[in-house]
Amino acid sequence: MSHEIFAFKRGDPFLWPLWLHDADPDLGLAADDPARGVEIDNGVSFECQINSRHGEFVATMTYEAYEDQVTDKGWFLIKNIDPTDDWPVCPAVTDIKVIIDGVQKHSINFDFWIQEAQTP
Image (cartoon, rainbow, N blue to C red; front, top):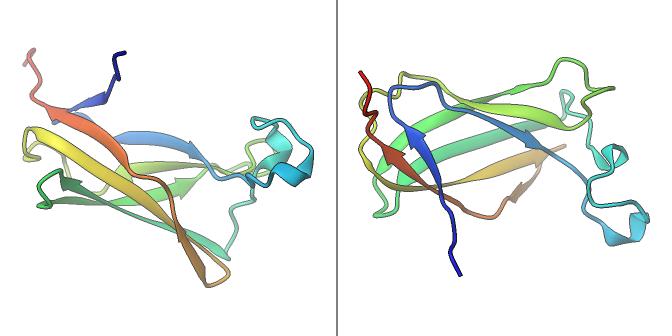
C-alpha cells in the first residue's frame, strides 16, 4: 500500500487552508457538515512551526481566518511569514496549536517534503 506525502516547492508561497471543527461524535452530524465549524473570533488563535524531520527549525508560520465566518465557519489559512526560498530541501513536519479561550490543543503531525523547484 502506498502512502502519498504532500510535497511543497520552496520559493513558492506556503498557503494551507484548514478547517477548525468540533469532532464530537455525539453531535449527530456528518463529519464534514459545515455546522461543525468553530467560529474563529478573538478568543481563538493558532500557532504553527515547521521543522525538518531531524528536528531543525525551518519556519514559523502565521494564520489568517477566512473573513466570512458565517459562510466559511472555522476556515483559516496557514501561510509563510518570510519567503520560502532558503528553506532546506528535506522531509519536514508540522502541527497546529489552537488556543480557544486560553485552552490549548495540538493537531496530529503533518509530514511533507520540501522540494527544489525544477523550472526556474
